[in-house]
Amino acid sequence: MNYKENFIRFMTECGVLTFGDFTLKSGRKAPYFVNTGNYKTGKQLAKLGEFYAECIKENNIQAATLFGPAYKGIPLAVSCSVALFNKYGIDVSYCFDRKEAKDHGEGGVIVGKQLTDGEKVVIIEDVITAGTAIRQVIPVLKQNADVNITAMVISVDRMEKGKGELSAVEEVKKEFNIDVYPIVTINDIIDAIRNGVIDGREYLDKMLEYRSTYGV
Image (cartoon, rainbow, N blue to C red; front, side, top):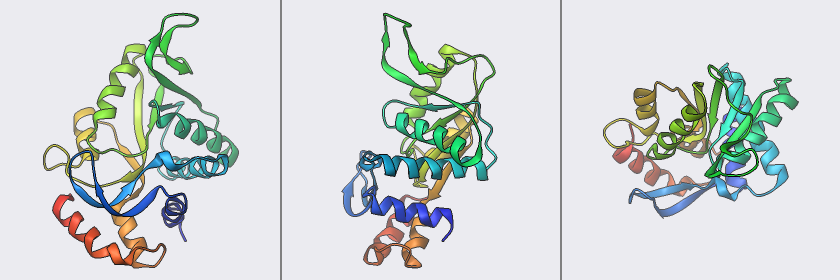
């Protein structure tokens, strides 16, 4: 199996990718759900970081610092930075934001690497649904320094329409000129079901129907 198929199987084994009947925050009824909050062991995080690192390496994404938006992005950025060093000898910094500014000690909202003008930053996230998180994150980064956001890396691109006819990923590219690199897309997941990489063939028709209705 290639690393994308391995990642899809890994998500199902960790209970992160599940199939059934789910009501999303958007109100859409979906036959699948991705919940990265279900990663909960050191072994899982170590492996997860390797998949993010492989995506960065494969796409030749340039980064001096990985930024993990609070809260789910924090362990993602940390595990990815460790994996980049252990697997490829690439040493990058990492940082994340506080939900509320600290008014004592070193203060501020950024924990970890303190950002500087022109620094190449890659945002590490789980999924993009409506692009709300990225719209909140960019002002936080820019208020600290005029950083160069070179890319955003996510687990899964749902390839769904956002506010209009574009997907959330396409909207981020159009609005902020930031390229978004998913480890896998919903099409990869559908192919994995078809090819027997993971179970879930009984949901295949619903997956295709959902993709036809909301996909781009």
